[in-house]
Length: 407
Image 1: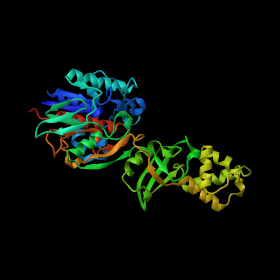
Image 2: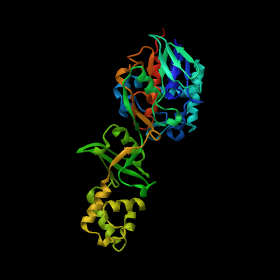
Image 3: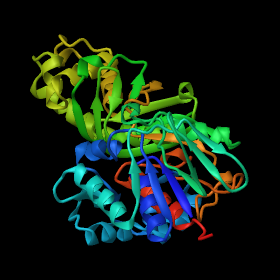
């Protein structure tokens, strides 16, 4: 069959490679001047391309679409991707948290390897070619309409990404094509992104707190409680803990959520109270803005004192028992209220897309339109950080390429 793959990112490259290796005539159409623009910025330019863990553990890190992905991830697990890339000359290494990177630490090497694989398999490329429309001419033929030409094919794979990092070319083309084909769309929202808070935290901007616990509650129900690293920003909070939380709450009414930070999770309240009493006794004539520096970075300490309603100039020996209890509460359950998530231009991944109920999980083919498939971020699939999202793109792309019938 003649196959057109729309989009030259992770999912599109694997789809094109798998389809060509299966014996199909494949053309990959890319709107940019080069392949893999989003690959270049993943992992801070190093490309965390997968997570070296078994499929069952991988699926535990999927936020939405775990059941849908089960077949694709078991057929093309992280080890299979790693072996495929290494066989084609890309040396890999595994770091903390089973995160896999190229030994060179250059994301460009991942893209170059994938392009080489595709070219050797017989894939042809059309760059600087934006697809305006996928014309469903009749029951078998597809028309991929560009600005100045039309490409006819027997089968079309849409691998255009979501809406995150629009500067890389991810501008929502996939969901638009799906809607035009009659598919249901789950509204797209940013995921793995910072959270703007109602509280002004700008005085603590740039302070990173390691080994704190971030908790999210909706009423009496705890939705999230995890220890890790958090970063204070001019708009609110970010960092690994916050990115993970954003993936869980991006479809919830944020006004119903309360966040709490425990800055001293290694100490229970009684132990921390004992520590405070000792500090107050040993430094009784010092101002609280200096005493608090023994517990937190100065600007963050001032923020905590403000929340506890203790004047920074107040001497330690003048702090009342009620004020100390307020400080204890601010250290163990510092309150935050999410106002909104940061936008798609900062989001690592898009949550939402083509409804999974209308896609065959074995082949990624549309259940509504013959000869049309979707893969990668265009689908309503997303996961936590650590290489899981990029592997979802690779695994669904591989399934789409392998799933094309021979006639």
